[in-house]
Length: 225
Image (cartoon, rainbow, N blue to C red; front, side, top):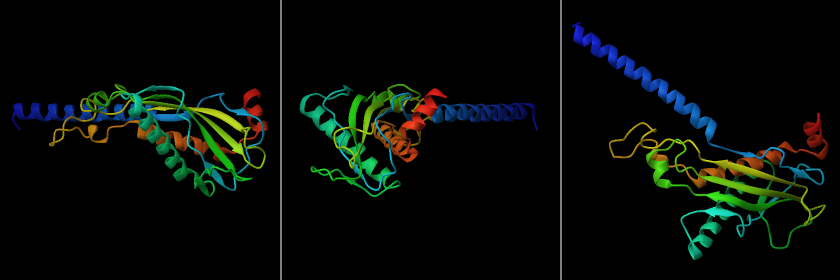
């Protein structure tokens, strides 16, 4: 092999190694930064969260809270409605893993677990920045307050109230997602992360909280031991 060819091969190997290393770092960042969670110390208990026999899901309230989105007036109200309905649909899909689940009727039944709440903060971020730059630029965020009612006990006083928070944060774009594909979009930009992903993660965390089946005694033990 000629010296020039040997040097070229070495450079190609080095470039490949750097790409693999960079990809691994980015993957680690992405795995750690895209999440939703129950806010620590937010659960407020007034009774025991029993394993539900049936779950009813009510639309989350959108009247208040902070809405950092590119819409106003009627468009904003329609946007809020769509967001609330999407979260409700995703909770319906998730909660069947716990118990039979349905939309909450206007006249609430005498038993079952009612899941409802409100949006406290919604940030749409910049779709353009997420697509082009990624890695946190133009990130989205969804925060909620969740209320769980044991309808056999009360339809007006929740058994537990807690908060969730989550956002897209670091995601790949054209610059950080592997360059352009032949069609002109990056592999990262082909799947532009946004509020839909935040809502899915929020529904998952609410499901996880219900499945955990904490009681007042459990919470006090964790807090003060």
